[in-house]
Image (cartoon, rainbow, N blue to C red; front, side, top):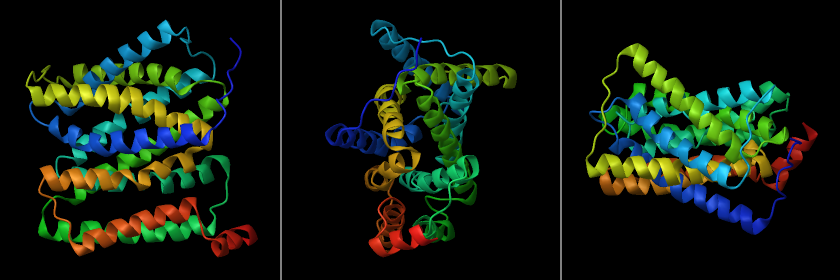
Length: 308
């Protein structure tokens, strides 16, 4: 089957995709935390993407878009399954054991920096000055957010922070793989379905080898979180986000991460007792400002980038 070009970008569609990503992913962090408990982390993620994969394959078959990855696309799809639909969520669920869900979302907002670094490593793109300056602001904001919580031993821990950073790096690797697949003519819905299946099989295999107890929590909290993570959080949001990756590139697509930490931290304040201190507000503003510098640098800094 011949390659299918990416859909042309339209401002209204781009804005709609951004809104979906911000609102859905801003609220999935608390759902991840609600799944912690009797069910092993790896199985919770496998259940999520098993359901999401079934729905994706059903839609692809109905719309006659189902394609089987072959040749150079196959290893990329399998790697995307590892990076986006299994290991990164193992990292974030372990992070959620000791991090407030909103703080995990703020760490995830550093995806734009990792995307820029990986683009430098993989594609040889030069790191522009505005990316470096924005990264410094973002780092300062993360320190302001996390340092008081780490010192007080509430809502945060160093291992949790490490898990969140590792999960974000893994997510950014998945971004690079998705952009590569879309340049080969693969649509996000197609690669997502196979990637979700690969992630499910990988986690299921691990559970069998590790001897994890096969459990499923039938309580309404767990089931509700499972359905929300599988359908809006996976089928809808991942397809919307990776469509943005194809339309705009990984760096600009990650612009959505500027906004959804506000949603996530607001939910943390309501349900986890997270307190908005002046330092926390300042830290979040620094993170957002750093992200904005990466995507929309002022004229003087853009000029410096051109001369560099």
